[in-house]
Each structure stands twice: as structure tokens, then as C-alpha cells.
Amino acid sequence: MSFPKGFLWGGATAANQLEGAWNEDGKGVSISDISTGGSAKQSKRFTPVFEEGTYYPSHVAIDHYHRYKEDIKLFAEMGFKVYRFSINWTRIYPTGFEDEPNEKGLAFYDDLIDECNKYNIEPLITLCHYEIPFEIVKKYKGFASRETIDLFMKYATTVFERYKGKVKYWLTFNEINNGTNPVGGPLALGVLGDTENASEFIHPVNDDPEVRFQALHHTFVASALAVIIGHQIDPNFKIGCMQIMATSYALTPDPKDQILNQQHNHIMNWFCSDVQCRGAYPRYMNRYFKEHNINIKMLPGDTEILRDGHVDFYTCSYYMSFCQTTHDNREEVAGNMMGGTANPYLKASDWGWQIDPIGLRYALNEIYDRYQMPIMVVENGLGAYDEKGEDGMVHDTYRIDYLRQHIEQMKEAVEDGVDLIGYTSWGCIDLVSASTGEYAKRYGYIYVNKFDDGSGDFSRERKESFYWYKKVIETNGEDL
Ligand code: BGP
Image 1 (tube, rainbow, N blue to C red):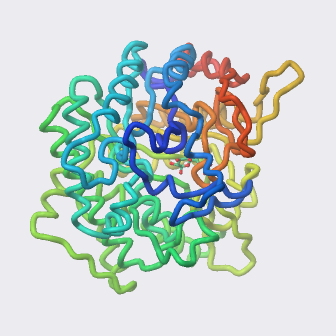
Image 2 (image 1 turned 90 degrees about the horizontal axis):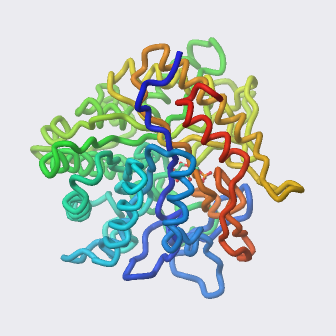
Image 3 (image 1 turned 30 degrees about the vertical axis):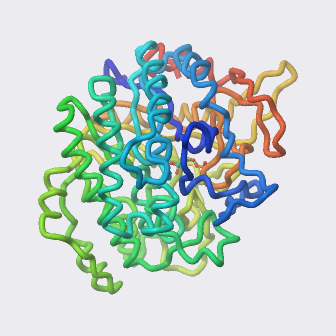
């Protein structure tokens, strides 16, 4: 039982969570730039206008913009075969509306990609990782307006043209299915809710399902057009979708729980990938739209675009699982912008995310049965408080345990016959958390000396997990 030869081992990040330099070299403001850090374990706070004296950790993040060479070198030392990162749309088109791209923004990614290629690290680029230009959000509510498709395509075409021949793997939208829920919609799709009541949540929630699902439709069309045009620009491009996969179980054998769970899975785990992998809306959405009074406006030609623009491979994040129940005695748990009922058989992380390695094997089997496409797990990991030991090193054995158990289950899935082609664990270097906006929730193999009170010199240090992951990659997952 082993991973296939050439398996793509690596790590994943997102521009808005590690680059910093949020307004340097012509960069514009993205939807992620307008949030402060929250307090640990809570959500970050949305600020519709920048507040004097307020600390926004993501604005400096881990200063990767100026330290990328050191970071890529460390990734190479671990033996990375692939590095997943995002291009920040607002470095290329600062407001989204410019006619010409910002050369300085492109120059940064030229250098970053060259640096990866220097070490034979395959770049895997996310086109939009919660980084919609804020001007597009203000003017159009992001993808709620059809106009945003063209703005996105202008950006996607620019980077495809620039990096043809140099980059093979692309993902269109990070965790697109986060748009199905009111809390995730703003970040994933730019559909901000009422900004006047914006103090409590990551972003003002959008609880109008019609707006969200219309925005999702536009995002599907944009994603499919990117696949079509990307393949025209470089036939060797492999362009994938990216979903949050959170395995969901019925809490009890009560058939009512089973049906509820099936319905939850349809909307949360399958709807977006069914459209993106199969190239058409799934039949169960007709009823859902009818019952929720949702009328999706589609233009002639959209059906063909979705059909022709199905993705080449499936990718997902996987951190946790949930249960669903119709019964009252449930204990609610929260995850990354989602929620569900607690599973009594599982333990949770410090942030309450329920840890479920077997749920990953289960999910990979389900995904592969459904699409028969190559799969990559492009996010997975344990957010934890790290403390340095007496020897000055972080001994993150808890992180190693989490990762080992998940990799073991991926191995099982490969043995089950799943075509798993790669694994990029999340936050391979410590960075700013998406849900809390803080440094305290760390995921990395590499410790970054930067803290939520603003102190720290950004220096990088190898954790115990660094050496462990190096060995995992060296042995292609044999020595865990
Ligand atoms: C995913 C996001 C990432 C990342 C990760 C961990 O949903 O794609 O951007 O942040 O979750 O989440 P958090 O940072 O909230 O712990």
C-alpha cells in the first residue's frame, strides 16, 4: 500500500494571509484586507472603512512579499514537489476596473514562480482565494452582478498568458461552496450583507439565498470560462475546482436524520462540484430553488459554457466533519464559517473543529465514485497554539499526529482505488488565520516570530514537524 510515484507533496498558502505589503507597489484593496484580527477563537472583525490606529495583522502578515526567497528555499529543503499559493487579483488589477495590469504586481509573481521552478517545485495557483477587489464588491456586490465575470476573465486571461509554459496547475475559486452559506458568501463571492451591522462577524453576512445562488451561478460561469480560455491559451494547463469538503454524517439511524444529512450534503458538499466537474446543474437543485423561492437568471449560452468548461481535476480542503440531526438534544459545533452537530465519537481542536481522519478516506471515496477525476487534497492541517520548548524549538507532536493520521487515511483511499495525485497541507509556514484574522492559530512546519500584539521580527524557524514532513516526502509517504 503506497502513494503513486510522482505524488505531489507540498504545502498551501493564500496571498492575503501571508504576503503582507497590502498596499505596496500599486496593490489595491481586496475584500480580505478590510478585516481586523478578532480575539482568539472568535471571528475577525469587518471594517468597511480603515480605522486609524487599528491593527490589521493581514496587512503585514508574515512579510512573504519581501521574504519569499527564504520561504521557498525552506519549502525546497523539505522536498516540496508542489506549492499552492494564490495570485492576489488586487496586485494585478488594483480595483478590478483598470484596462492595463499593474506590471509591478506581475513582476512579483514572475519572481515567485521562477523561484519555485528553480527548485523544481510545481506551482499550483489559486486565481481567487477570498481576494475579490473591494471596489468590485462595493460597486457590484462581487459576483452578484454579471459584470464581474468579465472583470475576472480580464484578470485570469492576463495571468494565463503571462504564465503559459511555466505553470501547469490552476484552481479557479477557493472554497467556492462557502458561497452557499450566509457567513461564507461575502468572502467567497463578494456578496456583502448590510455593512451597518458589521461588527460581529467576519463580514456582514448575506442571508438572501437568491443573491448568493445567483452570485454562485456567475462564479460557475466565470470558472468555466477560465477553463475554456485557459485551455486555449495553453493546452497543457490542468485547471481544477476547489471545495470545502466537510464530511457530514447523520447523527442517528432515524431515517429523518438520514434524509436531512443527504440534503445537507447535496447543498454543501456536492452542488458546486457537481456543476464544476459534471458541467451541469444537478437535478436536486430544482426542488431546492423552488422551495426557497430562488430564481436564477441564466443567459442563453450559459449551459454550453458550463458543459464545455468542466474542470480537469477536483480539489478540496479537509479539516473536520459534522453531524446532522432532526433531534433536539444536539450540541452545536462551529467550523470554518460552517456549523453542524457535534459527533460524540470525535475530539476537537482548540478551536472546536472536530478531528476526523477517517472522514477524509470516506470523502475521497465518495468524491471519486462521483466524478472519476484525479483528486488533490489542497488544504488540511491543525491550527494550534505553538509554544517553544526549552531548547527553543516548537515540538508540535500534536500537529504531526494530526497530519500522520490524515495521511494514513489518504493511503487507505489510494488502496481503495482513488486517483489521489497530491497533498498540500495548509499553512505550511505560519500565517494569518482566515477566520480569526490572527497569528495565534498556527498551522506551519515553519514557525514565524510574529505575534498579535504587533511584536516579532518575522524570523523563520523550523519546527519538529518540519523534519517529520521532510521524511514523509523523502519516503513518498512510507515513513510516517
Ligand atoms: C480554509 C481557507 C484558508 C485557511 C483555512 C484554515 O477555509 O481556504 O484560507 O485559512 O481554511 O482556516 P483558519 O485560518 O480560519 O483556521
